[in-house]
Length: 317
Image (cartoon, rainbow, N blue to C red; front, top):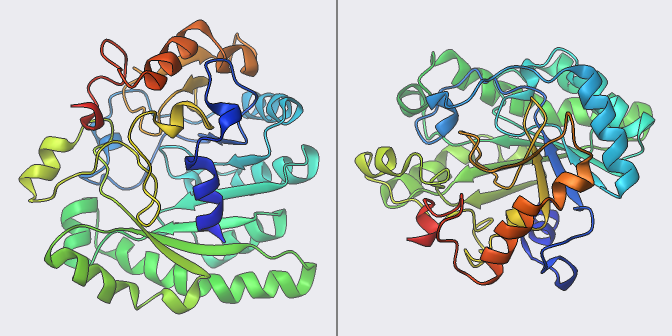
């Protein structure tokens, strides 16, 4: 199940509690920095860095290089919405069939995951498709995502089609893609409203799990406070298996690559302050163990990130 995989990444094993590390088991790579939503809880809508598409030749070179280095799981997304990428299905096939990644996963807001595109993704070998379901109703969707309410209904319709399409592909090819949904477990009344909304889709996915409200590296803390919500400290994983905020697992166990080839130390690198290396000029493992990255990991292991890129994060106040 997806929660077992998440917990395996957010738990920092002894082999990864150092400054110079083996290749991460998992890497997320940003096919596009663009998104068709402008969610108030996501700092991507602040447009603090360019949001374009990854050159295909860079994508293919990096995937080959990371697989040779020992990366096993590849997420074809980071901060953007990958269904905006016209060659998403081909990217999945390249990762599975050309590079041999054992596990290829994807997270989407669901609005553009139409049945025909999901079928193509499943047939290409996608192992996991997770929908981010973070709105209790149409009105809240419009207020938070700041797009037309039509997308809310498109999201629900697409999720409800997903199981039928997945089962069809499995019957034809023998390949089965896991279907999952996550939701932000806000506090107070909103929590109950979310549970009611989830009843529309729980029979269409294999597992549903809750996430805390993140501060997005302290970029949206003020916005969330104005809405009456209290963000969690940093990225502590999923609810039910929260990790200590220091050392932060994202600095040790998972790679994050922006559309323009920057290796980041953070799940929420919206403004570039967490860039640890330029993969257009530097080999992946050299950037993964760059001097800058080693310095940051040492600070996390000491549980004192004063003066580092992580200092502003709400987790360390």
